[in-house]
Each structure stands twice: as C-alpha cells, then as structure tokens.
Amino acid sequence: MTVNDSEAWLEALDRDGYCVVPNVIPIQACKEYQDSAMTWLEGFGKGFKRDDPSTWSAEHLPRHFAGGMYSCHGVMHSAWVWKIRTQPGIQEVFKKVWGESDLVASFDACNISLPLGPQARKDIEPTKPWPHIDQSPELVHKRQEVQGIANLYPSGPNDGGLVVVKGSSKLHRQYFDEHGRFPFDANVDPKNVKERGMHFDYKELDWYLAHGAEIIKVCANEGDFILWDSRTIHWNRSPQGDQTRFATYVAYAPRKWMTEAELETKLEVFRKRIGTGHVATRNPDEKHNKDRDRWDLEDGAKSVPARPREEPEESPEIMWAVGVRP
Ligand SMILES: O=C(O)CCC(=O)C(=O)O
Ligand SMILES: [Fe+2]
Image (cartoon, rainbow, N blue to C red; front, side, top):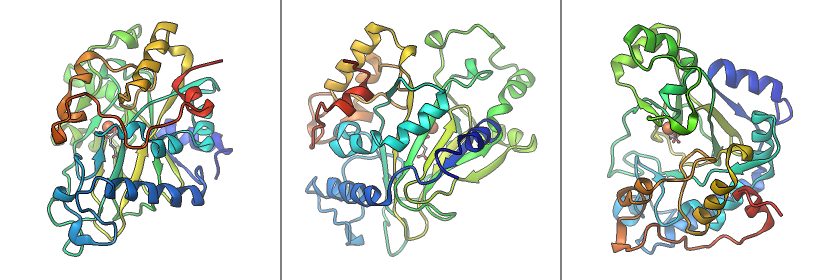
C-alpha cells in the first residue's frame, strides 16, 4: 500500500478510526530528522548525549511532558520541524483525506521519548493511559478533525507510540444517548463548541470495549504516516524496548475553513512562533497563549513563547503551509 492506494487507507480511517499510510517520508530524510532531533536535545547544553544513557534523565533534557512530548522553546517552529511538516508526501496524504488541495498546516509539537528501563532512562515511570478524544463531543456525529503522526523511527508492539481504541469513533452517539451526555444537535457550529475534547475514565473505556471496540498499539515503520479521526479514543505508550520514539504531530485542513481575518491572524501566530495544537484552522486564544506552564516556564523565560533556536525561513513552501497565497 502507498499514498496512492488512498481508497484502502481512507476506508480503514473511516471504519476503524485510524490507519497507517506506508512510505510517506523517504528513509534518507528520516535519518536527517533523527539527527536533527538529537542535535536539538544536545544543543541545550544540559548534558544530554544521545549515546550515553546515563544522561537520559529530566535534569539533562529540556522541559517536556508525558515522557517525551516537547512543546516549549518554540520547537513547533524549529526549522527541522518545519522540514518534516512540509514533506510533500504528508501534504499528499491530507489532500486525499479532505479531497481538497488548498490546505493549511497545524503548528504542533513533537515527541522524542527515550526508552525506559535499567539500561536506559530510569528517572520516570511509563505513562499511564489517558483515554481521550480531541474533537468536541458536541460534534461526534461528524468527522471534523483528523490528526497525524510523522513516524520517524520504527515503532513495533513494545515500542513507544500511539494507542487507539479501534472502532470507538463510531460508538460515542450510543454512549452519550445511554448515559445522558451531549444531546444530538446536527446544526452545532464547529466554531461555537464549548468543549474541545473529552477525557474518559477506565470504567467508561470498559463500556466501549464491551461494545466491540479494541485497544490497539499502532505499529508503523520509519517514514510511515499515522492518521486518526480525532473522535477515536487514544493515548500514547512509553517505549519499553530499546528503541527511542520519535514522532512529530502534523495535520493539515482545508484553508477555506478559515476567514481572511483568521488567515491573517494565523500568519501572526506563525511570526510569533506560537503553537496551534492539532487543529490547523483554529488560532490559539488568549488563554492558550498565557498557558506558560505548557509552553515556556523553564529557564525564567519572560516572553511567551520562546523563539526556536533554529528559526524557519519564510520560504514559499513554509508560507504556503501557513496559508499565505501570492
Ligand atoms: O503521542 C501520541 O501518540 C498521541 C498524543 C496525543 O494525544 C495527541 O497528539 O493528540
Ligand atoms: Fe490526543
């Protein structure tokens, strides 16, 4: 299967709520990005060395969350993250997802999770599942958002990576009806929803599993691209073998979903080096920008957010993804 067999993978995305598109990013490019990520971590001067597991701990690494999610230091706009984001194969994938070629990109974070264990990272425990969806539960009758992962190291069954609840995207309506949650409203306006996602406790998860959904660790090769419907319940798993997890979160959505004014703001968001989360067409609000704990608390940073160490160029490729048209 390749990017061009889109009928097959789009069917899987619809049916199961996720799919893996193979060979989207050339292997040679993956190698370059792996090196960039490690060089980026080493460049903070906190003592991290890629080949020395004794340096694999929080004290030697820049601020991160959940064992390896990096969203501080302007990393969403680092030149190397932009190189991954603008890979033509990834844009092809999202053109097929939306049946639309005029797109804009999200400015999202990356994940570099070092393996845990006695011979590897010892200062943290594996993350516990945090089952959630990232699309508003008020909109569950309709697929509104599709998230993506550029998978840049192999990710097998014991490696770190995305865990999905296969089939869960189709069960929410029944769950909400039976439990008196979020009444159905076919006309709800995506721009006016109150919730942007929803967390589930383990008892709720059991309901989905009892109704045919299945927990799957998504496996993918170097250079594959993972897609999931934001209504699919998911979390991630820490690496337990000897393989580092390296992924960037990348999504594109139709540019026509934004007004001209919103597109102008998106350009400002880019120039201020702010992240957007996974929704390419939604500009972050004030509250989000002030969320210093998430974006830049470390090292006494005064401005939110910090600028990336390697600034992106305003190249035609990058400006296209930001939504600027000549
Ligand atoms: O790290 C992952 O695979 C998933 C993280 C997550 O929940 C997300 O990107 O929405
Ligand atoms: Fe998520």
